[in-house]
Length: 326
Image (cartoon, rainbow, N blue to C red; front, side, top):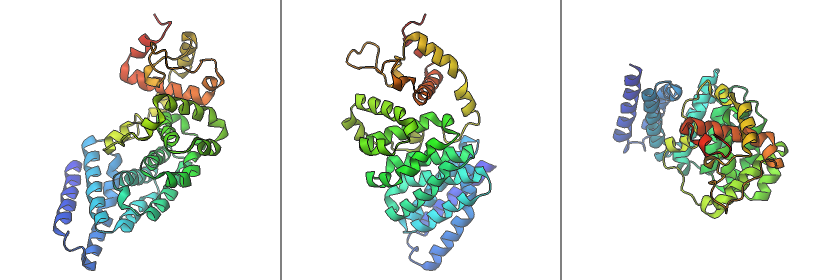
């Protein structure tokens, strides 16, 4: 029943998009369309985090149709205001859903949103990187990832201090792969000296580690790499789905100590999935396992997250590839 209801909302929005296309010049028609969006968007946004995949996909389609219609009819301020209203919600679910909707809006329609409007929106949403609720904070991190991928270098430089506030959160350990994606993109688009100066001093070893990895893969090529052409592909880059798993934080903590001990016995990591290169590639210089960078807690936590992701995807593949394993 819920899936059918959301499908009906999508059909209504598609019908309005088709039949009203030639009448949006009439102020009365524009106002009635906005009244319709004001009624349906809150429900659509709540379903963006629905446990059911079918309902979630239908809600995303509704949001896409509504945003496309509004933005192509020069109603960008109105639709952004309507979606942003969810940020004033009293529950963490409503806030997280609103941020998810804004992330999708920015990813798909950033070229249609004026730069001034984008900057105001980004400034407001990034304030949630200081939120104490894990769902809201993680959604804000995903929004930050969208920002560093779709915004210009100049825009990114302006909001960099706000983005780096994510390191002050107590939930940092639950989103290591997401944070890694953000740092990697920042390394590719911002000058090294500028980024190093703004980066939190306690996490500089982690920045230097990522910079080395990017340099080894070839900065010029990496900086020109094609952007993800769909929201699903973009979201999959950090190893997370559209809906947050309540047990993610606990699952990533399991086996952390044992992984560090195993890595020490093995004499360092040679895992391909960690970007360290193949064991037979003599041209790639690996970071010595005893170096200060590798010993830093932030780097160790990042390596643990990579191992956890590799274990989930490749099973015993990583164990067989390490030297010293039987």
